[in-house]
Image 1 (cartoon, rainbow, N blue to C red):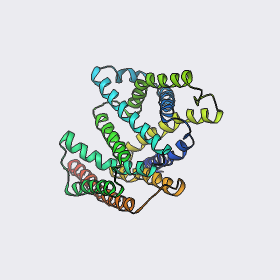
Image 2 (image 1 turned 45 degrees about the horizontal axis):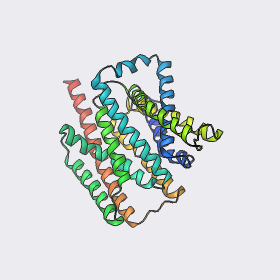
Image 3 (image 1 turned 90 degrees about the horizontal axis):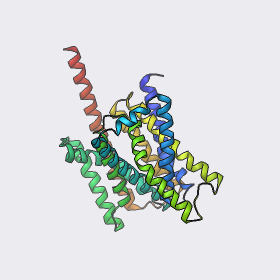
Image 4 (image 1 turned 60 degrees about the vertical axis):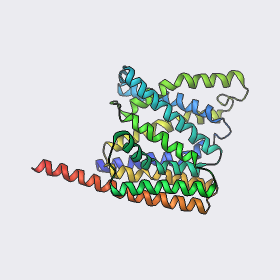
Length: 302
């Protein structure tokens, strides 16, 4: 298999794990979301620390937090990703996975809008149309259901802001995420200490199955990220963007076909607008990617 082929395979596996993750979190639906989040944080820290130790890169973690500026950026990223994780876990437990999938469909379009506001990045005509269609989809759903799709908006917004601040970091994704969960670990330990001392319903230790599932959260969080990092180094940006839609598509199918969540006419219209926007956005990304590669070729041959 070629290098690009291995990268695409890694991306497909990564997005498949993310897309099917609602099935995993549904098994933990009887455990409070904040407790699940605390375990996810701590077991992710264990997983990432082991990976960095094996790679001989644990020292990079100290360097990543070495300056107040870097620590502040990583702290904000940790806040955004923990809120994203918590809301996603909650959406599974309350039967709102369809809306969560909408959030991850919206994410690339929200990221484009954030880039415009934060970095002054110019939007192409096709990108502007795709962002406008996404805004129209949210407006249609809000009008039809009588309430804004807050879960989708917060998920896409927090993930967009997370990506924004990560652009300002010079460390790799595994090191930065390890630093993030390290900063969150005292809070996670405090949450679990409260559950184990103040209630009789703490999940870990009460059931072998629940304990094993909670420990598994570290691997399910860390392994896809490593695959994603592997893929981004070997596959073009346009291809990464296209394969990444596998994640919300699988979430959507799990929500509707397995969990039996409601999907009415207003949902159909909103999702159709989002899918159209993503087609336009993907075509625009491919064109930009191809133009950039042509420019590199022209520079190399001149």
